[in-house]
Image (cartoon, rainbow, N blue to C red; front, side):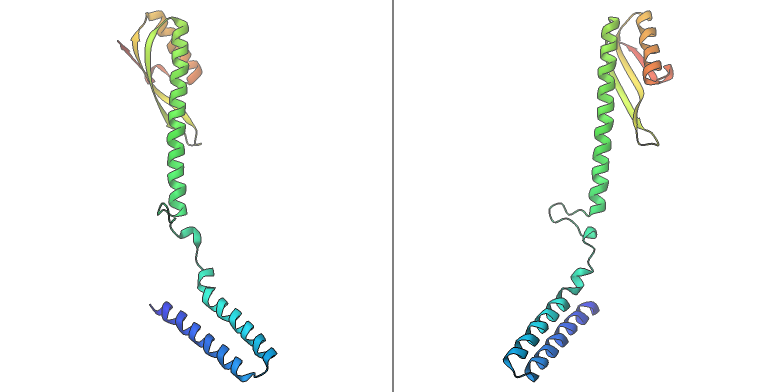
Length: 158
């Protein structure tokens, strides 16, 4: 409340001084110049507090979120998209490899984010029918191509 009182007091004092200066000068030309300068001074006095406002800290009118909150939300959405993209592409690759081996299987992939911010597949769940040779070949491919050791591969007969 004190800041508002000080702001209003500055406006009133500025208006008083502009009026006083305008009334002291009686000439048309000098009176107009003083009125113009006084008006500019009033505008600067009125908008000075607005120049100190940190606009990035204010919430957006449409979303109600600050810039930092919007940035965090965008980061979370991007991470979720990247994770889903890595998982979907890994499933597609696994389905193609299984098709080449003649396997009938479905895959579920879980990806995790590394310290560098990259998303990599961490765990694969395979459900379907296969021979032991097909299983070993696909398991070795996953280990070689995806760096997924057999401990991170869950095989379930379907």
